[in-house]
Length: 230
Ligand SMILES: NC(=O)c1ccc[n+]([C@@H]2O[C@H](COP(=O)([O-])OP(=O)(O)OC[C@H]3O[C@@H](n4cnc5c(N)ncnc54)[C@H](OP(=O)(O)O)[C@@H]3O)[C@@H](O)[C@H]2O)c1
Image 1: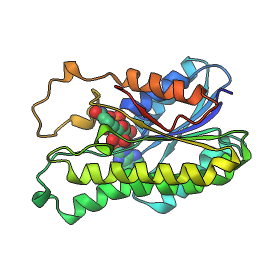
Image 2: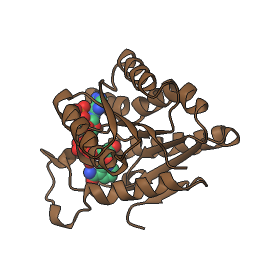
Image 3: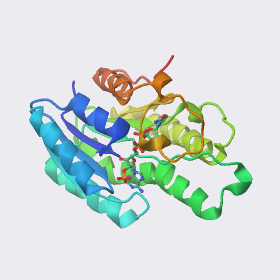
């Protein structure tokens, strides 16, 4: 059954925004969450223009109280039941490992893995209330193989894979599906200011990733791991 009550972290721009717009249709309620409220407000308007209902939940994945408040706001909007949680928000940079200071390492773990874990934990009661809920975690090809200059990013994305695999086994009997999606390089603001010589014209579009996520959400069986570029 197609999900109708959806929380998307990092929904203000990039892949998260594209996912929100892919799901936006009449009868769907979407909560988009991130730190930047003007981006969220624009996405809310775009979802409404496509016929859906939407709210913005401003939050910071580095602040547990803020995660609690955002999920509470989403669940209230969904009247207690969440069909789909998409843990998409993330941060990225490229640096030799010896230059990765503790502040950077902490931030990457806070946002890319701990934030996804705590958001899921807060959402579990509402996911259990829905009929056949789904958690989709946006990892990366960096969650499947190592890249130079990406030791910290890769560590968080491998961790997200481990979390997803274990949670899938834990929630399977309750009918809650857990899927991990592994996008390849995708043209978003993630690369702004990153010291890499990149040809953005060869990257996937956020809409390509959104299509893969949308298809995964229509499956009744749990498609465990999905690479955007097989
Ligand atoms: N682009 C790629 O090539 C690529 C490839 C593989 C995987 N991915 C993954 O795809 C996901 C989306 O990335 P993207 O490319 O769309 O990047 P993006 O355009 O930079 O978007 C990242 C999103 O995460 C949110 N975010 C960052 N820090 C946050 C925090 N502390 N609290 C709450 N929200 C936070 C951002 O919002 P605010 O800054 O407003 O908070 C933004 O909405 C990430 O998990 C990324 O690792 C991307």
